[in-house]
Image (cartoon, rainbow, N blue to C red):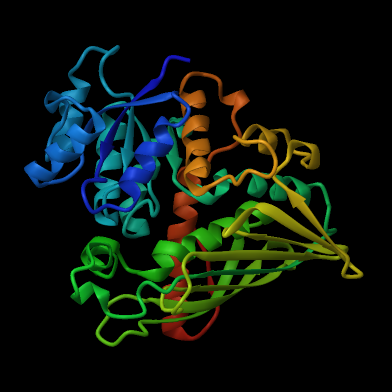
Length: 378
């Protein structure tokens, strides 16, 4: 397949996700990085471009200027896809500008700082939803795809309850005051938006609940807080969930759980059994029947039922499939879609997923403020 030409916004020195996205996009040779506005600092921008093998003529410290320059190039040379890895306050403006200039967009979550900022993006993306994707990376894991297919096929019966927890410990101390660049912007409302922890990792938990269950979260009762004194955004919280069809659930998101690294676990309970998946053991699903007998399914084609999940595998059974591979699966699916081969790719999280997460976060914030149930309206 002729590789899709990509420009990246953000992801310069000190970025966690920039190198991850560059490696993931390159993994299948279906996307080629050709341009970028990696940093507003000229030296850092040039250093990133040089490391990535990008010509100085195809970089800029100004994202919109880069988009204008790329749009002016001949059609067979310009970037086709814009990957947005910058802090949250950049997402909506760059996504809007990219769509207006005819580019496809792959955007890190959240879609914007808040739902109001996202409406212009959503309006533009509505005309061509197949040209907008969101980086809900965990959907790219083969066993997450398999879990979704098993639940839809009735493997655990009628869904009754969902329990999801996403806990980290890296913000247990006030590291934003100690020079931690990631913490500085993620705890700053001007850059991160109206929520810290829930906007960062809580939306992954919300997205996973809706993706695996196939049901929207209709209402929440939440309690969120800043556990670290002086911190301006939430770093810890929990919510009760009401899903469509009477399903109930709980969601915990915290970045002040000392000792935790990236523990993201979900369990779905039905009338005939339960299914569990954990991000730190991503190649396994545990199915439990109503009598408590547990069966472990591994990332092995012989043990999997869903063709899309099997197609997402990169290694033989017993070889761990990792986080970068999961993100690479999303990039590969998007590249196939942009090349008119979307029928060969699993469904991608798109603009609707981004809007759902923003609506969820706003409902969580309002519920925590009012101490009551709040509807999730996107």
